[in-house]
Length: 466
Ligand code: HEC
Ligand code: HEC
Ligand SMILES: [Ca+2]
Ligand SMILES: [Ca+2]
Ligand SMILES: [Ca+2]
Ligand SMILES: [Ca+2]
Image (cartoon, rainbow, N blue to C red; front, top):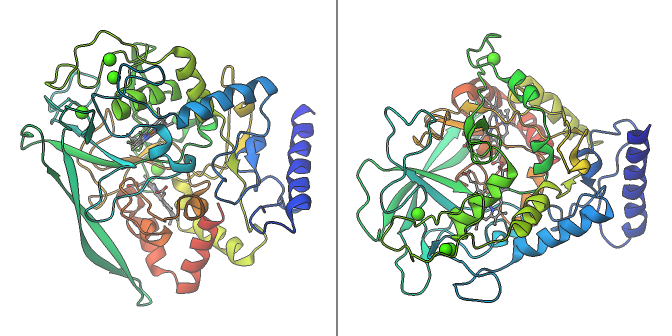
């Protein structure tokens, strides 16, 4: 009863939004259609009907007044610019770091991109490690002496950045059965100006900043649901063998299911946020109190850790747990409907699972018990040598990546002004991203190659409606 009522309220609010703004803004759309009521609600009751450049930046509409207050504190902190110690406000930046605020990488709570040639990398970062033949038992990446597990390309005054990375693309192409040529670019990375030599066998993994909305919902999916989707030995012989990552959980002091990051290498949003502060900004927290430069020549030797309060860490975690998911659009368009059938027929739903049910996330009722349409299984898949970074991350091997959720993917262009997709931003649009699929997704990619141009257009139109 209660959830029906809330659903009804969500509809009403959405409907009113449309009524009020219909004349003003063509973009604020996405009414749930009478014959397809829930499919538009990608994030269940956390869904927002906004297809503007603010589509990823809205608090979940079903937050309590108290929840909204906490969210808005987190929002402010997500945008806070950090500075060098000593300072009154937001001290602790560096000594080495990648950027000075969360929002600088996750612009408008959205997607980062690969730099164009000659540009510094700002909303993208490079993880590094040494080969781990025997391992420490957990599969944790082995830090590179002097660099740790990430290249920090910026540093505070008087300190050397660890290095910069140059990207060069090689242009290639793939031809569809009906003769259409699609251009694909392959990136090659070179570390330049390292402040000390990097070992020859260093492993380098490029990662662009993902969107940060809808994440509390993903955290609220019961572990059993995700594990039930895994099929590591491919028992049903569909060529897809999703595998769960198990990664180091600092709070638990043991291994937990990984859910966040391109290789599902973070178990919880709290730890994901704490490691963003630490690895990306050089800001220590009670969860991760050791500076990322600890043991390196640039370490400042100050005993001022943790640099961030638990209140802020928790508010920012709550913020990324409770950003609304934008509603689907164009559900009534017959081309989009055809595309949805093709998405299913091409086997995309083998990994991009359309709908899941969340369980209970303690202290976050807004994301609990929701029917959502994330288009992910949160599992790792071998995507073939073309996309491989050859840098293992816990149980993820060098060619495995976590299926990214596809909700909101069609709005990245509106929000972030680009269409760079995949973990390293190499794809310049949805079709390129699909044609890079290999490994377990070989059959899917082949199916798309064999489609007619109008079928491929329909498939892309469907993905863009998400
Ligand atoms: C230098 C750019 C950069 C900065 C600064 C940064 N991030 Fe990120 N963020 C990334 C990248 C890249 C990833 C993906 C990491 C990976 O796959 O290992 C990521 C991942 C995430 C994720 C997981 C998303 C998902 O879908 O799994 C969250 C949440 C997040 N960041 C929040 C934050 C917060 C909060 C801050 C500020 C404290 C922050 N980030 C600062 C680049 C950045
Ligand atoms: C075997 C699992 C699997 C199948 C099948 C699959 N995908 Fe994916 N998909 C992934 C993974 C994993 C990635 C991330 C790869 C990377 O970033 O290198 C991805 C990335 C994407 C992206 C880019 C998302 C982003 O945020 O960058 C799109 C779009 C996409 N897939 C669409 C499709 C479509 C359409 C199909 C069917 C034709 C399909 N996928 C089939 C696993 C799969
Ligand atoms: Ca610091
Ligand atoms: Ca480093
Ligand atoms: Ca299977
Ligand atoms: Ca410090």
